Image 1 (cartoon, helix red, strand yellow):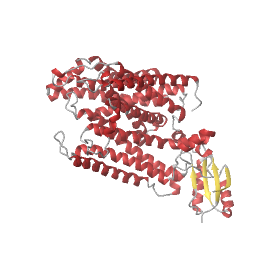
Image 2 (tube, one colour):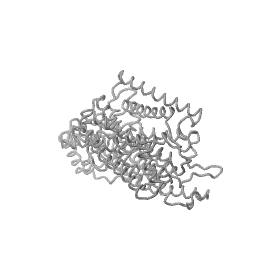
Image 3 (tube, chains in turn blue, purple):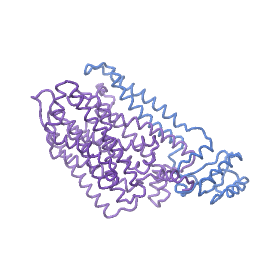
Image 4 (cartoon, helix red, strand yellow):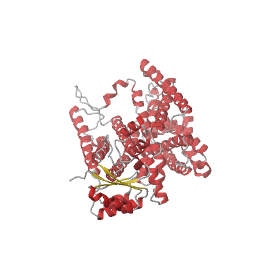
Length: 170
Length: 423
C-alpha cells in the first residue's frame, strides 16, 4: 500500500543528512528519497541501489548503430552495384568510418533516451514535496509514511539536526 | 543573466549588422552564381572549405574541455566548460553552413543524405565527403545532447529562482528536474557515458575532415600524419578561441571569481602543448615530402614555403608555433593582454594554415598548363566576416539566457576544495 503522505526534512548540512539516511535504512525504510543540488556519492553508497541501467541503453544503442551503419553502406553499395575508383563494391575499410560514426550517434541517442526513461522525465508537475531551495543550498529528505509513523520519523529527523521538518501530502 | 544593458544592445546591433552584410553577400552569390567568388579552376576549394575546416576545428576544444578533461578528472575545467561547450555547438552551427554555401546550389544539399530514391541512386560511401556528412552531423547531434544534458540541473536552479513567465519557460527547459537521488544516480551514469562517447568522436571528426584531403591524390596532401596533425591543429585553434572569448567575457560579466587567472593559465599551458605538436607536424610534413623522393610532392612543398602564398605560410608558422612559445614565460601567461593577443594570433594562424594547405596545394598540381592562382574576392570575404558575426551572435544570446558557468559543478567544486560538507 502506498502511503498518502510523508515527512519532509530540510537539512542545511550534509553530515546530518547522511546520518539520517543511515538511521532510516536501519529502521527499515526503503523508499525514501534524498533531494540534493549536487550529486552526492555518499548518498548513493548508503542507499545501495543497483547501478544505473543507462549503461545497457548505451551498449544496445551502440551495437544497433554499428549494425545499421554496416547495413546501410553495404546494402546501398550492393543495391546500386556500381564500381567506382577501382575499389571493390563492398569496401569495408571505407564503411568502417560510417559504422563508427553511427555507433557513436546511436549510442549517444540511446544514452539520453535511457536517462529520460529511467528518471521519468520530462514531467510538467513537480512533486508536492519539492522545495525551490533544494536546487540552491539545502538538502531534502522525503520519507513517505503514514501518520502513525510520521511523528516518530519527524522526531528522529529533528534530533539529527534537520533545519525544518514537516508532514506533507504526496 | 541580468537584464541587458545599453552596451549589450549596442554589441547585438553591431553583430547583427555584420551578419546582415554576410547574408547579403550570400544572397548575391546565390543570385549570380558561385562565379562571383574567386573560386574557379583549378582552385575549386578555397575560402569556404577553409572556413568549414576552421570552424569544425574551433568546435573541438570545447569537447576536449568538457568530455576529455571530465574523464581525466581535471578540476580546473569546471568553470570554463560550459562556455567551451556552447562554443562547440555554435562553431558547428557555423561550420555546417559552409559546405552548403560552397555547394553553389545549396537547395540540392539533400543529395548527400542516404534516402531511397526512385532511380536507386545511393550516396557513394567510399568517398570521404560522405564520411564528412556523417561525422559532422553526428558531432553536432552529440554535442547538442551533451550540452543540454549538462544544462538540465542548472536550468532547474534557474527555474527555482525565476518568477512569472520566465519560471514557466525555464521550468519547461528543466524537464521537471528535481535532483532526487534516483535522478542523480542515472544522470551521473549517463553523463559519464556521453563523455566517453564524445571523446573518440571528437578525434574521429577532424580525422575524417583531414581525409577529405589526404584520401585524394593531390600533391601536398599526401602526408599520412594528416589525421593527428589536423586534430592537434583543431584543438590548438579551439583553445585559442576559448581564450579569445573567455578573456573579454569574464571582464564584462565580472566572473573573475569563477574564471580565475589559474584557469586561463591552464589553457595557455595546453596551447603550448598543441602548438608544439602543430610545429612538429609542419616539420614532419616537409621531411616526408623530401624523404619521399616524389618530385611532385617536393615541388608542392617548395611552392608552399616559397611560392605565391609564402607570406601567408610564414605568418602561419610565426603565429601557430612561435607565438605560443611565449606562454612558457609566466609573465605572458598571466597577463590578460598577452593571453588575448597570442590567442588571436593563433586563431589567425590556424585559419591561414587551412588556407595554405587547401588553396596552396590546389593551385599547382601536376600539370603546369593547369596551374592557376586563387585570389580573394569581396563576396567570400564578406561571407567569412558574416560567419564570425553569426558565431558571436549565438554567443551573445547564450550569455543572456543560460548560465555561462555551471552552477551545479561549481558547487561540487566548492565541496571538494573546502572539504566541507555544507554549501
